[in-house]
Amino acid sequence: MGLMDMVGGLLGQGGQGQNPLMSAVVGLVQNHPGGIQGLLGQFQEKGLGDQVASWIGTGANQGISAEHIQSVLGSDQLQQLASKFGLSQGDAAAGLANILPQVVDQLSPQGSLPEGGDIMNLLKGFLG
Image: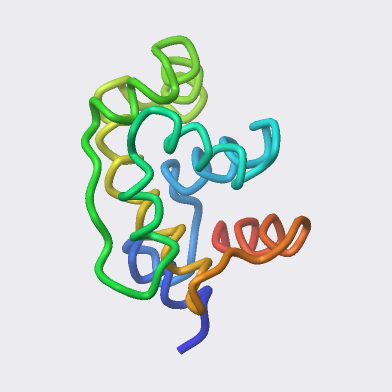
């Protein structure tokens, strides 16, 4: 099973169709200064370094809550994402809290993230 199939399965998409939460993750990475490393750095700055390390590492993923997503992204950014993808702010936060650790985990199967454009190509491929 390829990386795209694994993430598609996590999203309940089988790699087909557009998932608004995956689109939100891609949007976060594309628009965040520093890309995914910058985004994950923001989580680390908010005290979630252990969780981020677990997503990138090869062990079990530690979870985060919708409140963590709210704290890291802030209500303005979360509301923009929610509106853009037709979700309530609560659904967007809860969905991102569920999917982000899984996506980062799948992007880092060897315990490190791909570099630069490689990660955007992988993320865009997840959208089907």
